[in-house]
Image 1 (cartoon, helix red, strand yellow):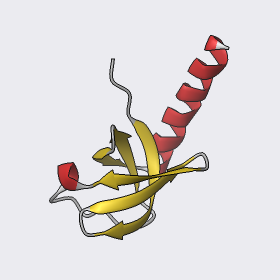
Image 2: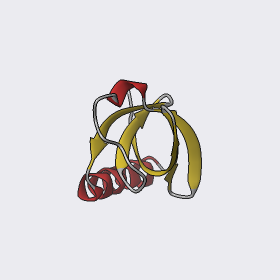
Image 3: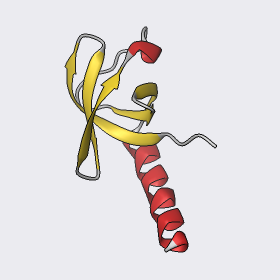
Amino acid sequence: MCLAIPMKVIAIKGFNATCEAKGVSREVSLHLVQGLEVKVGDYVMVHVGYALQVITYDEAQVTWEMLDQVIAYDA
């Protein structure tokens, strides 16, 4: 099973971005979203260090809520 996490783009340098989610920041490659306009403040779905797609804030919120429910259920 693969899992992608929604993250907010904090900074962009070339084809790399610093992204943040729930207080954790990571360097993320933007190579897989070439051709899409990704800018600071956007949200992206991240899997193993790669942004897979640009999403809305609302989509990010729904995903975070579902992930929180899974974590709470597992506890």
